[in-house]
Image (tube, one colour):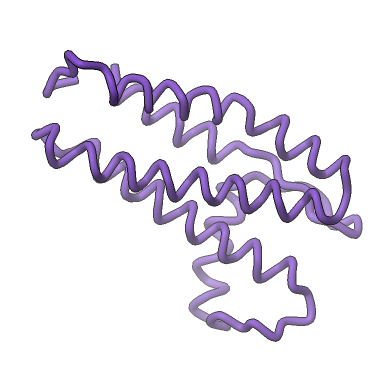
Length: 143
């Protein structure tokens, strides 16, 4: 049951809508994650970017991608003692990425904030479910 909840949490985090200010449109978190890899390989971390929102999204996408990869790796561990710290660390990274996106959008426009936060509500709900399932007393190893 916890594996299914983690997978759904990863999917819901990937489907969070992110509005880019100044009329550039919308995208989902997964799109920004896949764009961030070639961008970082080509340009690196350029802090003096002309468009500071762009480098902020790249950093947030990398943090989210690392968190998702940690959660996916934790699905293959058998021992719950190895699994729990990895799951918590992965969850912390993806919730930090979500908070970063929400904080970035609220600085620009309340409509962008509403779209981003509204599309993230199902993710927050499943995030809470995974935390609840992790803290249950009778967690099974094969679960």
